[in-house]
Length: 201
Image (cartoon, rainbow, N blue to C red; front, side, top):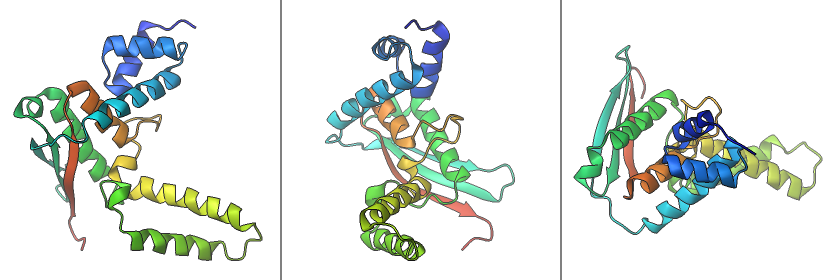
C-alpha cells in the first residue's frame, strides 16, 4: 500500500522520529500510520532499553504557571549531557511534560513501579468489593479488576498517560520519552515533579 508525504509528516509529528525512519516504518506497515507508529514505538523502546544503564546527570528544571496564576507545575527531566539539555527538542519535551502534569490533576506518580504495593492492593480490594454482588466466575472478575488497575495507572502515573495534545489518544508519555531517548541518543528520565494549586492541601 502506498503512502503520501502527508502520512510521513503525520508520523513525524506523532513520534518525533526522523524522516527516513518514518518512511521505513510506513513501508513495514504497508502504508498504515497506526501500524507505523507501533513499529517506531517498538524500535524506540529497543533503543531506549539499551541506554537504561547509562546515568542521566544533566537536564532541566522547568516551571509552568497557568495563565490564571492559580496553578503551577515544577518538573525535572534529566539527560546525559548539557548539549542535549540545550536542544529545542529536549526543551519542548520538558515543556510538554509540564503541561501534561498541569492538565491532569490525578497525576501522582511518575511510573507504575513507583506506586506503593499497599496502594495497589487497596485499589484491588475496592474493585473486588464493587463487584461482590456480580455472579461471574473468579477468573472473569480477576480480569476485570486488572483492567480497572490499568485505568488507575493511566490516570495516576505520568508515563502511562495518553498525551493530552494528541487528539487520537494513542501516544503515551512513555512512548514520547522513549522516542526522545532514541532520537537524541541519550537516556532521558523524568526525575520528579510537583503540582501546586491555590487552596489545595
